Length: 366
Image 1 (cartoon, rainbow, N blue to C red):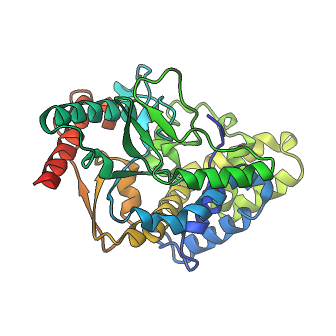
Image 2 (image 1 turned 90 degrees about the horizontal axis):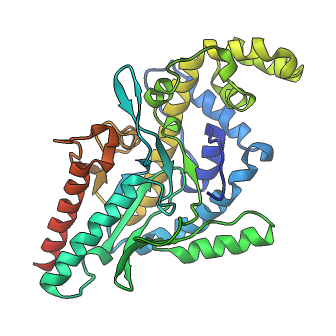
């Protein structure tokens, strides 16, 4: 992984701002009138601090270059897809329920079980179609899938030397961005192509946690909470914009006097408002990501209906909830799943995806 970072709302906004409309205003939902716009105002201020956003500048530059190129994908079959995947470790068990290690990482790394299983399934499907029809890429070659993630990193299926793979459909955007980053002496992106069965892992470009968009996932990760010591200085500073007026001022005052000297008091103030912080931040984060996708992907593509390949309980649907005027098609991935803890990587889910792709490709031939 090229750039391991801890995402917060200020970093998310900084990265997504080039994709969002200038007049974006978060909706209040069930919160008191004025709270969400006020919180968003604080987040925007924090996003102007280069000490907090410097490590994600590469993604902002990339988005600035990517946005005007998205309409080039308009003639392709575009679909949304989850940005999270379980890895290959055994799932841990909490209160009798299996929870695997599930993370967001771009499709390049090969560590995400979902993307590997998907590529394997597409490879098998293409082999069968080539046996039946001869070599013709009009099916897989027309697909562009857009993972719902903080960095817009679409992929398409390719075939080279009799092997299926994935690559970025606009990889020259990354090459252009890398040129700018090299001039600045900054870290560049990772690989832009991954082949099935390749030797060694490819280098990914970013990662994120589902906790960035799901309060349920964030609160579940806190099971077994042993005290405020688990809130480090990074989490504390990211929480400040979402605290109540009293707690925010107290934390800022004590931080000014020194974190280590006031560590216990600061961590307790944040711990006492943990649920509110997580609820408010994930609610805002979902809206910002939805705004970016609607403004810079869905509208330029001119779609009124789009497939969303994600389990019904996925954070993806929480994001799409804020996009209106477009019908999102749920593929019902988890129906009949035998190993539900694998999420979208469950063999039944993979089978449904491959079956859906097969049906569409057959219709294209008709």
